[in-house]
Image (cartoon, rainbow, N blue to C red; front, side, top):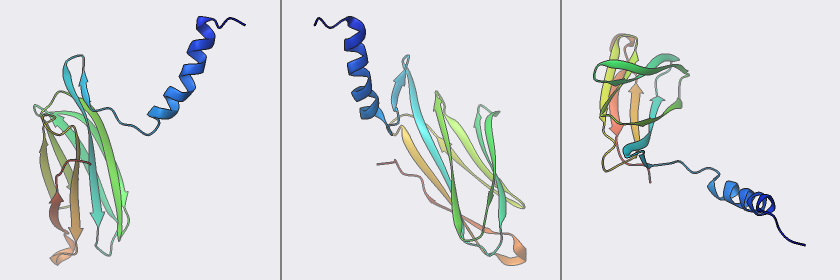
Length: 134
């Protein structure tokens, strides 16, 4: 039996798809740096908090995700983008914090915002890390 081009492509597609499952792309897309950002909000307060995670470039809002984070839990928002640099803002009731994300040198990045119980019900905000994802 002679294998056709269709049979060869079909035979190669399944192992290729299985090999790429779970992978994230980081590198360049048409010569522009491409990357993934994970913004993790950890709520160590006794209350559920509502947060909005914003991704901005040059002051323009590109994307925003509103989340409700129950007490003693974490929530992670993922952004896949090219270009930059970006400003990442995490905003809650009575507080906000921000990060700067540049794709050069570290295409997969994780920013962590830790909320702890503060006076008057306003959480104490601490940025606990901004390292490359390994």
